[in-house]
Every structure is written in structure tokens, then in C-alpha cells.
Amino acid sequence: MNERRAARSVEAVFREDRSRLLALLAARFGDLDLAEETASEAIEAALERWPVDGVPDKPLAWLLTTARRRAIDRIRRDRAFAERLAVLQVESDRAAAVLLPEPGFEDVPDERLQLFFTCCHPALSPEAQTALVLRFLAGLTTPEVARAFLVPTATMAQRIVRAKRKIRSARIPFRVPGPDELPERLPTVLRAVYLVFTEGYAASSGDDLLRPDLADEAVRLARILHRLLPAEREVAGLLSLLLLTDARRAARTDAAGRQVLLEDQDRALWDPDLVAEGRRLLVPALTGPGAGPYAVQAAIAALHDEAADFDSTDWPQIVALYDVLLRIERSPLVALNRAMAVAMRDGPRAGLALLDDLAGAEELRGYHLLPASRADLLRRLGRTSEAAAAYRAALDLVGNEPERATLARRLAELADP
Image 1 (cartoon, one colour):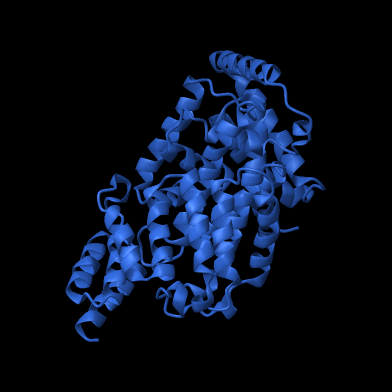
Image 2: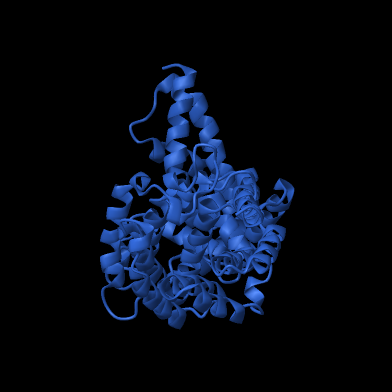
């Protein structure tokens, strides 16, 4: 075997199992820095040994054994480090012993679930949680995470270092929450994955509308969560939502990368396999009392995907689902989306009245889709000058170039109908 082939083998194993390797090491030693360092050393060792000895039958097991040995060697050399890890391990074991799992929890197949909950611990800020999920579970490099957050690499590196330091100083255990904690803790994990997807679905800035790398990673993370927590309905709901939304990816831009709005999309380009899988997952997500917000959003996405064309969309049912969603999650963003659905059901004047009620919402301050939505409804009402002002307000706020081009085109059309 030549060196290039060995390198490809290492890369394939590490890309597929990196998060599991890190999770296993972090769970064993209770330290993300140590897990990262020894995983990297194991990769270096593989690049040296596999060209000579051949790729082992169980590459992940080889990497894990090598990394564990490197970790133990370091602990033996550093007494203070060993003492600190021992304290963390005892506390983690004690916490795990107190919170006994319900039947079925012992069947969790690997330690990645522990790493999810550690990265999304409530002691960490939402920004830190998402950054850690991208870094350690999605496998993005620090520069890639920085691009996702639109910050310099050095800034993101510092943020990740501070988050890891917080995990150590707060002695956050590497464990899955017990049944009493899970309902409170799981939404934070799901939110982190959802935020990764939304940035991939519509990038907050840059020359491209889509970030397929982030969307793909979010779907992969949601699949891992669903595999690890198959009985959790909101996990199924989140995966369903991502698949039903991502199914439209190929139709959302044209050959030149320009944005194609939902009403203009070629629905033949939508991925029928993703739609079918998303609909299958929606059934258990909605079965039983108290559907969660991701399941309800997935039901809305399914109605869009099932419509033969934009005009045949079941807007009354979509409005009804937004009513349900608002009862679950009283968010101005949900109210904005509902207003646009009402505009499709009852006409632009009805939708505009609802948008005007949101004008003072702090959460929507600086959000370009509020003035953009107003502009669209004002245009449909023939209130050209007001629509133009709203389009200009949206252009001042938008960060994504394809979306900017769409708004500029609509503004130009007002001047030259």
C-alpha cells in the first residue's frame, strides 16, 4: 500500500468517525483538549504505520487504542493534570450514578450523545454551544466555524478555547441527562443543530445564497441524534423539517446562482426521496398529545412540498398550523411567517395589518425580511412609493448578495413596471 492510499484511508475513517472518536476520548478522560490532542496524535501515527503495516480491520478501534495510550502517557507525565482529571471523572461518575437511566437508555450505541449534551450545556452561551457542535460533532475546522459565524478565525479560536475552559472550570460532566432533565436539555441541542441548518439554507452573508456544507452537516447531525434517541418525537420532528426543507435545495437558485423564490421554483427539481423520508418521519413526530415546534414546522413544510404548484398550496391549513405554532412558541418570527400565510389566504391587506403590528418587535429589529415582506404586500396592493421605501429599508439590512439582488430587482421593477 502506498502512502497516498493510506492517507485516503485515514481521512475516510476520520471524516466518518471523528466525532465518535472524540466523544469516546472525552467520555473516558473528561477533557476536550486532551481528546483533541490525542486524536490528532493517533491520526499522525496512522499516517506513519498504515502505509507499512496496512490498514487494520477495525480502523476506529486502532485509532482509539492509540489515542488512549497517548493520553495515559501524558497523564502519567503530568501529576497536576492527572489529579484534575481524576476529580472530573469522579464527579462525572457520581452524577451518572445518581441519574439512573430509564429502560432503553442503556441501549444508546455510542458516546456522541454525551458530547452533544456537553457541548450544549446551559452553562454555555448559545453561540458557544453552536460553535462546539460544529467543531466537535460536525467536524468543521476552526476557520470553517469562523466563516459560519462571520467572525475572524482568531476570534472563533478564542471563543472555542473559552468554551472548553468553561467546561473544565464548571466541571460540566460528559453524560446524557437523566429522564428528569432530558425534556429541559434536549431543546438546546436541537436548537444548535437547527441554527447550523438555517445558516446553510440561507447564508447570513456572502456571495452565495446557500451553504451546502453546513446544511449537509446539520442533516447528518440530526440523523445521528435520531439514531441515538429514536423515541424522542421532537428529534424526529427536527429531522423531518430539515429533510422537507432541504428537498427544495436544487430549485432555490438558478444556473447563475441567483435566488429563485418559492412561487417561481421548478418543483420537478425538488428531491422526492427527501420529501418521502421527511413525511415518514412526520407521522411519529405528530403522533400523540402535544406536538413540538419542530414537528409543527415540519407539517407546514410538508404542505408546501405536497402542493402541485404555488397556487394550489393549502394556505388555510398552513395558517391553522401557524396558529398552533404561535401557541407553542410566541415568537415574532413565527408571527411574521403567519402574516405572510394570512396574506396568501385572505389577501395582502390582511397580511399587511399583521406585519404592521410587528413593527416594534425587538427580535425583528435589523431583520431584513420584515421590510422585505412589507414591500412585497405593498407592491401587490399597488402602493408603489411605500413599497419602494420598504425595499430600500430591506436592502440596507440584507447581508446575502443573492437576496440583495432579488430585492434590487423588485425595486427596479417598481420604477419600470
